[in-house]
Length: 289
Image (cartoon, rainbow, N blue to C red; front, top):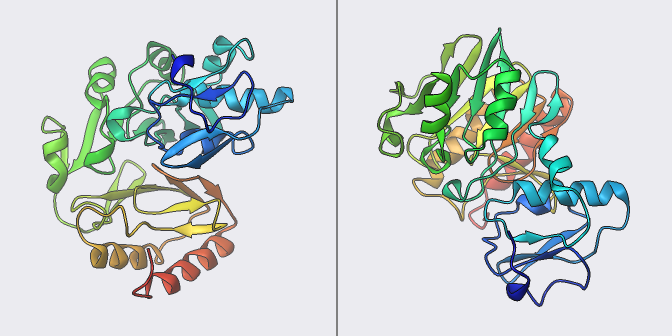
């Protein structure tokens, strides 16, 4: 729970606020951009939600926040917000919420593939999510895009008997994973395509499921750019390798980009291809960050 005594001075007056435990992971700004902004390495409330719709979005951010840094006073219902998760984005596609500080606030998703459920990266462990996952048919695979976003994958694997998938190069983050991918060639597995995309980490992978591309920390949509973005600043292995991996994605068709950090985005295939082409031109510049 957020602590009013640690309320940031950046916040405007009102019921909603962010306290000094914020890690500036961007979760609240993704979910409620009309309420939250960032400055001085913190998120803060720049505009108090005034409509029921704005309050609902802000309450989603309260529940999703990995560090419990958002206070809401007497406004909003935590139980109503909890009940919304996992949040349905499309048929058979869900955003889990419940970001984990172990994953630097990275997002996780649940997707149904040929009668099997894949959890893509891990949210923080929640009995509520366990119950909802059970209602949705359980978890068969836990696909870990890279070492940073493992969070509580072991607990969900234990509860559901799920097989965890991680690249061998990032295996130290989940050494007991049942499936360790070796090499860097794409792999078909039960209706999904595993695409190694090294760069952010040596063992980073993306997952293509029909129209959905789960990109981990490889690629995201940026609201401030109104376009696709890859981070050179937050790169822990090799920017040249990441650029090669981004070019590799141009070989595939997809409508959705579903990242660990940044905003998810859906566009028609041709428009998404054009946006990727624009990004590939940008990353050719030595000044790109």
